[in-house]
Amino acid sequence: MSEPSRVLPTRGGDHLLRRATADDLDAILQLLADDPISASRGDRARAEDRPAYERAFEAIDRDLAQQLLVAVDEEGVVVGTMQLTLIPGLARQGATRLQIEAVRVRADRRSHGIGAAMMRWAVASAREQGAALVQLTSDSARVDAHRFYERLGFTGSHVGFKLRL
Amino acid sequence: MSEPSRVLPTRGGDHLLRRATADDLDAILQLLADDPISASRGDRARAEDRPAYERAFEAIDRDLAQQLLVAVDEEGVVVGTMQLTLIPGLARQGATRLQIEAVRVRADRRSHGIGAAMMRWAVASAREQGAALVQLTSDSARVDAHRFYERLGFTGSHVGFKLRL
Image 1 (cartoon, rainbow over the protein chains, first blue to last red):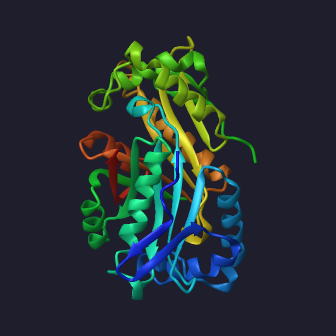
Image 2: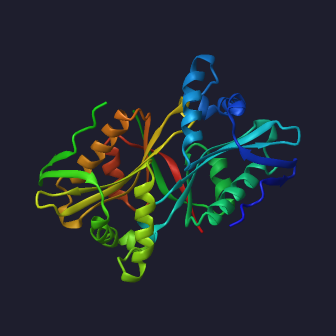
Image 3: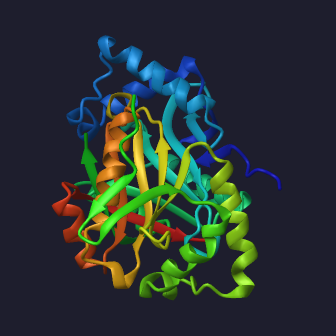
């Protein structure tokens, strides 16, 4: 199986999709903090929270089922991120699922097709890995995001339940 | 950290929650097939599908982030199942999520509190493992299940998007 190309041609120029390294952490945290819903959940890129983020980064990085990715522009600036998780399962005739979490594109780079190119890459990658399903949840308040996912072929067929501990 | 007790007291007697083994596969497949929504997605416990289910079981079993569990009654009969996945992440200040998939209770054993006891165990286990969030998606058609999750404290705050490949 050949991996789908990690060069994402977009209306804002070519972008490279690559695995995030510890050096990308601040840029990713800024993407989270710039999102009002994430900020309301406590993601504000505060210095005092950095140790918790570093521990989380290490846990993601050492887990073979996880891929934390960044999209960088031609200058190497991080403009997008997403996390992919491969989940084997019995349901749907033993289907492996690719789950997408924490999709973010820098506010001043939106509407250039970067997010769509990232998502299409994720779907192509899921196919390459033999997954039968790609899934994600999106906060009910993110109405624009819902249209975006529907344009990409996703169906909002489920209710996403969360319980904070 | 001590693991929450795997003995689930229910109105239908004590049940034991344990990791599924290959010997439980047929019973789990029967639980899937007995569910009309699962059956409509192709889970019909057919002999010709067994190799795919066996491969999926092995993939789940060797992935340390996965726990495929069965609830068995005092006679050792499998009456429920669920799959738990631990997903590290950066969002929500580096929160680890516990994701619950494929919750099923045998039709003739419902309304005995078995499913609720399984879910409460999953939530307690999430806490023990330091997770900050428990999440699951439920087909929009499963209106009774939604009420069940809400009674357990879950909030249907998200839309669950799926894309079949």
